[in-house]
Every structure is written in C-alpha cells, then in structure tokens.
Amino acid sequence: MNDAVKGETSDSTANALARIRFVLVHTSHPGNIGSAARAIRTMGMTRLALVAPHAFPHPEAYALAAGADAVLDAAVISADLPAAIADCRLVLGATARRRGVTFEELSPRDAAQRMLAAASVGNEVAVLFGNERVGLENDEIKHCHAAITIPSDPTYSSLNLSQAVQVIAYELRVAHLAGSTVPATLGRVDPPASALEMEGFFEHLAQTLDEIEFHKGRSPHTILQRLRRFFLRAEPDRRELRVLRGILADATRMARLARRDG
Image (cartoon, rainbow, N blue to C red; front, side, top):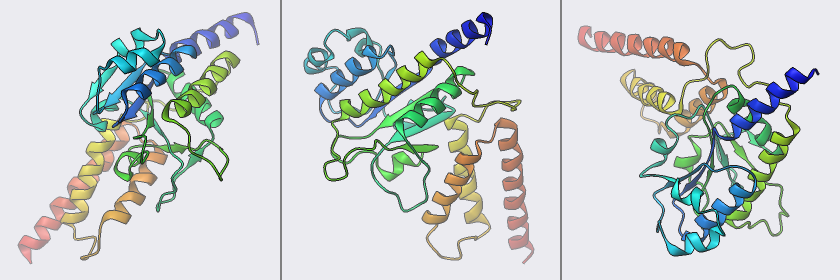
C-alpha cells in the first residue's frame, strides 16, 4: 500500500469515528451517563445521544464524567428512539438477550469493523444500549440491523452500562488505529435507506398486509418481525424502497377494487 492510500485510509477512519453515535435508551441513573461519556471520550469519540433519560442534566453525571464535560454538554436528548436514529443507515444494539426471531449477532470486534466501514463511506451509524435493569426491549431492538453480544462469562454476565459502552468504544478505537476497513457500500450506487425511511416502509407494509387480509385473523406480530429482519438485512436503498412501496400501493388499490366489485 502506497503512502497516499495509507493517508486516505487514516483520514477516512478518523472522519468515520465522528459519524458514530452512542445511544443510551431510558437510562435510569445519571452517573451511568457520565461514566459512558468518560468511556467514549477516552477512546477518541464524542457523540452521545440520550433517549428519555430519567434524570439529565444532573450533577452526578458530570462528576462521573471525570472531565468529559464537553461530551455531556453536546449530548442530544430525544423523546423516543426513532427520533434519535432517524438519519442513521446502520443501527446495532448491544444486548445479551436471545430473541424469538432469528437475529444476527456480532462480536464487539466484528461490530466495530462493520460500523467503521459504514461510517467511512459517509453513513451515520448508531450503537444502542438499553436501560440498566432490562437492557434493550423488543420494541427497541427491532430498529437494529444486528445485535452486539459481548462474550462475557455465562455464569456471571452482568456488565454495568458504562462497562459495555467501554468495550464497544475500545474495539472501535482498535479498528480505527488499524486503519483498514472495507467500505460497507462497496459496489453500491446509493447508500442504504435511513432508519426513518425504513420505519416509513415498515408502517406501509403493515398497513398493506392488513388491507389485503394477509393475516387471516392471526397475530401479525411474528410475521412483521420476520419481515423487518429480512428487509433490514437486505439494506435497500431509497430507490429500491420506492419500488417496494409502489408495489404495496398497487396491492392496496387492487384489494380495495376487489372489495368494491365483490
């Protein structure tokens, strides 16, 4: 690899770190927010987002930030998770909980590579951490493309929130220092759709399945969860979503015509 390519890779990974945000969802204890801010700052990152924190701003958060006050000052507070990740094109969730629906699980090291690769080509990236007591809920993890599972001792796997943040931040730092990533959108013309665009599609999909009476009286929850996993794994771009939504619109129109003529 020549010096020009090395320099380009270093610049792209440095810029990539600035596109990665750590999202704490419904954090109960303000001290954990401060400790998380300290954890990411020591690894060269500053983006912190808070979804409906129980208490913030709070003196305890600043005390445990140990000087990472700028991270707390710049933290973005959102009322709900969709608002916090609306512009993101890759969303990963740190969780140790098994789900009923098959869900891709990544090690912290693999997750760091994937996040850095996505961010290095200009995509906004989020990594989610749930409430201290229950972690990420099903309604929160459903927004993620994949889960991050820290390989802790199964007989004592309880990590403090800020410890989990530190592990992921460290792996991102290591990947950044290595300076070698494979662009996440290699071979693609357009980037993946944003989280906001995907949520709009999922709402449209759910409405269409109801319109065409696909569920036949059965609970739609499982099939919708499986379809979410399928489309998030596929990572469609905006133009592909427009095609899919056009198909849904036609299916709805035909179903209404059939009911009217019947």
